[in-house]
Length: 112
Image (cartoon, rainbow, N blue to C red; front, side, top):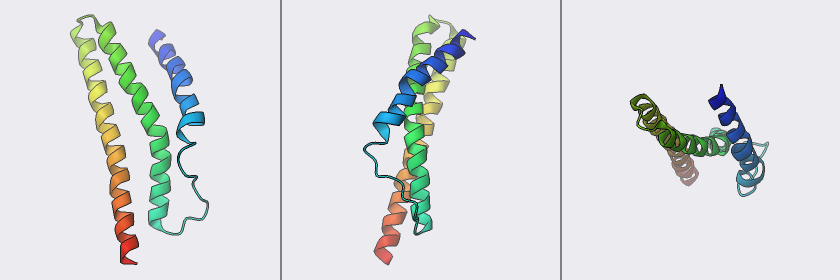
């Protein structure tokens, strides 16, 4: 119970302000007139990136916190390692999808 309250507090203090003030101000707005399926996937991935990257950063911080508070407990250390590993895998997939869609969109634009 105590850890879930700590996670909710950290999420509220770190992630929500970055979503509202930091992340969205530098990215171009999502236009309502999506002309192609590539534009749709870019808009979808832009939204997923705006939400996923701050959550991934918070998960990395939380995994670091778990490493520090494990105090040599093997189960807690393994849990922290797993969380860090899966967070990095998830962020890699998210950013890799963005790169793949951008490459496909650029190729389609060149063919037109």
